[in-house]
Image 1 (tube, helix red, strand yellow):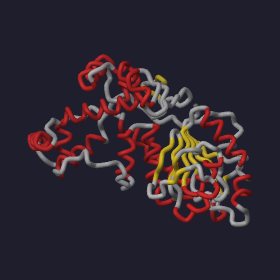
Image 2 (cartoon, rainbow, N blue to C red):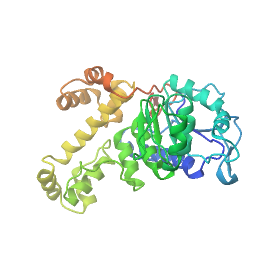
Image 3 (tube, rainbow, N blue to C red):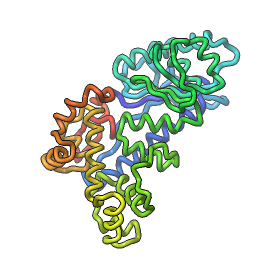
Image 4 (cartoon, rainbow, N blue to C red):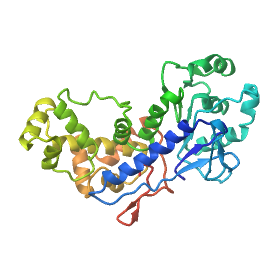
Length: 345
């Protein structure tokens, strides 16, 4: 696999294309920060900006961006995103879609190879034209509803939803929902914790916050720990960050969560590990490292205490109901000079 790709469709909105690139830049920086106190891990997965012919992407308003290549490179991607695009008013919808037949064929091949594919706004027409949404569900901007329904009567629209999933295909209603769509993608190809972090740092707050305590101090401490769950943080550091004593932190956690900060971090690590077990093909040792454990035996012991089963058994028991795994042989983060097959980092 070759990482992630965004397709610079002619007439694509700069903001819709840029939010994808910016989001993964932020995630890459957070990956470095998250694991800085353990094994040095960097995000080696490359985000490619592709065009049909490999030339510069011609965006809305006449702007251009240099591309990283065309669709004929023979690379298989883990994730492909189609940004929102201005429909060509000089062409009928069938003629406009005919111009993207090469892209449609490429998307079908990529999906068959295991790629997760997303589209925003009017680009959902292109995704629908591939047949990957047939008999499924999608969303699209309200002004495009009549046109979409006429051409694709076998696709059910949930126009009240900003983001809709159908198997390994995800659609977003348009520009206003782009960050929400990208956050959902981040959750699929990384971890829920990184997706929640992206939500917070971009002020989206898409991730549900019902896991946070009603108490402000405890909630702030939860968020602080979530950003550092894979690090070796001490209660003294948490107390200092919250500007209170260690005893105060412990008292608030016990009162509002019924646990300690250490127990909360352990829950975060196991939750992260469960997601990695179900969504990736990583080894148990790799997952242990990415979940904050330097010793795989300790990880196995803690995981069994929390989940009631070993990591391998958990993967086997829940695999059938999990999202399709993302294979990542070509996107490998470096950990202490070693390469880990990874779609997260």
